Amino acid sequence: MTLVRERRHQEPLTLSISPPHYHRTTASFIAGDPSPSSFSSSPESSSPVETLNDLEKLTVLGQGSGGTVYKTRHRRTKTLYALKVLRSNLNITTVEADILKRIESSFIVKCYAVFVNSYDLCFVMELMEKGSLHDALLAHHVFSEPVISTLANRILQGLRYLQERRIVHGDIKPSNLLINEKGEVKIADFGASRVVAGGSYGSNGTCAYMSPERVDPEKWGFGEVGFAGDVWSLGVVVLECFLGRYPLTKIGDKPDWAGLICAICCDEKVEIPASGSPEFRDFVEKCLEKDWRKRGTVEELLLHPFVKNRL
Image (cartoon, rainbow, N blue to C red; front, top):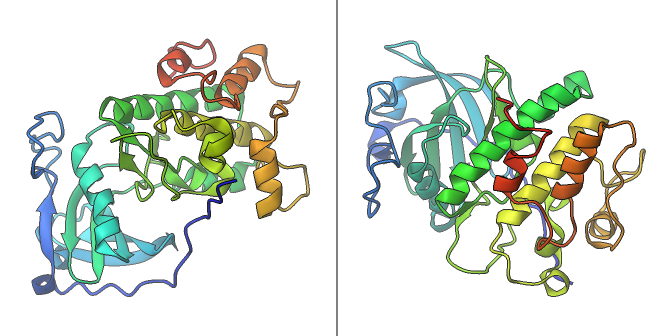
């Protein structure tokens, strides 16, 4: 069995905002990508952030996966932004920057600019005022089916956009789904993502939300490039929102490595509560089909009665 480890959490980072040490790339330029749809050049999408010194740090929003996210305010315009700072091997983290430069969607958290130096990679991001879906679950515990339906529709819309650009997200989970002041959920954090170039899986991501074919590709086959893995992760998230807890282990069990591997890769189907509506149960069942060849696709699921016409 192929072992897949979660990315390690690192110590909080100290951000130096001295502008001479940073190089800036903006959302209006992508080297080697002439596609006019990659970024909008409209005034609404352009960023006034020319250097990191334009931003005043207000507070720490979160940290983990090798980085820290700050709430910041533009000194001149007073516009609020999130500033995500990563410190690691830039040969790896610049992959995330490259992917963010390719995308422009109302279902994905917007990146306005990227600053790099020898140590840090800094993303000026859209501020999602309500935090993450993980935070919302801690506060509300469970969600109603209409709320889950709308959430699932938005995530599927985002995944469809990414798939059209051959991008696998690779780490769909509650903490990577952010909520703005309108209550809209958007996909964030492309640290485990990749542009599909073949049947490779990659080991980055969070084990608890990985699909069977990512955890044990020898058993489930190598023919899938990763899109079905994002669908599986969505199914885990949807079921977690319904139950108010991680759904692939028993109540009270603390998920450990062996228990997660068994829950994800064993032959038994994932148990879906009978209290859910037939539409909900069928939707989750199609997402959490163990065999990726039989799993629902993003296009199929967008037409499913549980999520159709939900925005």
